View 1 (cartoon, helix red, strand yellow):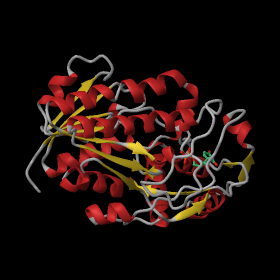
View 2: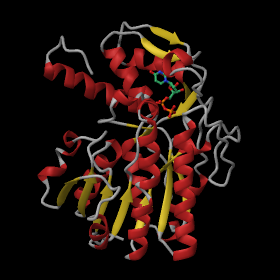
View 3: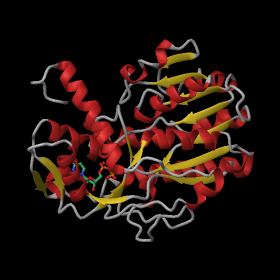
View 4: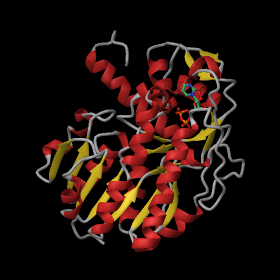
Length: 335
Ligand code: UDP
């Protein structure tokens, strides 16, 4: 299991990709990242750039003639490149669909041609408005009307899943499809709308925490180190070929409670401001009331379960942001 590998990561300059990169380099694997830096950043790869085992290629996947060679020359591909965050998707509608659909097919084609394993990161978003909680991999996907634009991401990713399984069935593509639930950790930007980095930033700037709607909706937050551990173990797991696998935490918290916990754990004087959903994210926007993964399959396949609880996740992230703030001067606002 511990032989060194050469790995290609598309979207490796993003939040999840850059942590995966660091982890693989630490294990002694060689890592090639391709990223167009649309939402990822070179800053995320600072640590990676210090390693002789690391190569960075700036570029898009769509129409990239290098892609086949890159896939040919590695052992495994992580395909993480995609649009990120609800706010980004709403602001870049055509592009986010294109990135998912047109950016994925060439990766599957290349991996199929050279018989390489590809780990394609999908998302819990595909479960949509399903009420069959906790969400199991073989459960129904319940996706709303195309007039509610949020669902475009779920549909595009679901289409990618269909494509992955079609390539698997017809051409023997060795593909693994982790569905990532809400993942949090250092380097996750508040820019694209994710709730925990936003709440931490607001609390540390002593600004009101913006709870959308009444805050009764809930999520489960999984720490990046746990998610990366699952991704790496799935990469090494022969039984995962052709499988969809949930990765996430099952510790459920309402968004209102999350806001309160962040305020308490950061000793902030900020209060909570409820903002109606259509004011926060535009007319006709939909939110999921609950999102909880069924983790039995991942436990069975690779014996994985998350190690970090929400309390320690908030503490770790708050400490990191506080020390960044101190480094930059006490008066600085966190952005
Ligand atoms: N949310 C919130 N305030 C914010 C950002 C998000 O109340 O400033 C809510 C959002 O409406 C959703 C939850 O937090 O119910 C998680 O949002 P996020 O965008 O992080 O991820 P999602 O699970 O919706 O993909």
